[in-house]
Length: 128
Image (cartoon, rainbow, N blue to C red; front, top):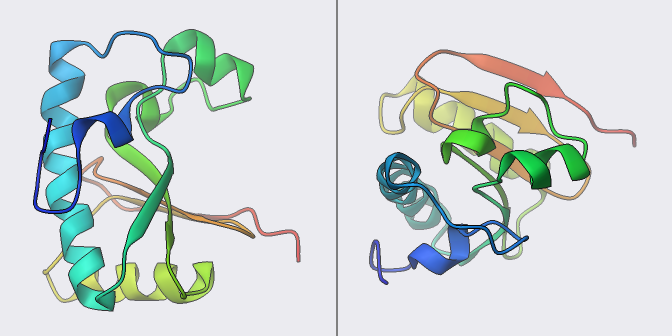
């Protein structure tokens, strides 16, 4: 099912195949709209490494007990041809200018985490 011009609901599904609850689907729809803004900024495709996670899958991958992934409010993304640091910097800029919704922003070596939790949260888990 298509959520936006460039994102389908299936891209946000849990990797363990578990059913996505209805309230999570609503959050995913809102997240997809925000990801479209990021995609338009770079004019480049986005790959979603992880979005919704069931409790079991979140535990299996070592996710936080309060992870926004559990609510369908988070996505770990890679923008084609753009470094994770440049993606994070752009997200910070888009939030600061009011173009993108405030939320969580995590820096990692190979991807960028963005979530729509409605309050500012920042972390850096890069190891290199």
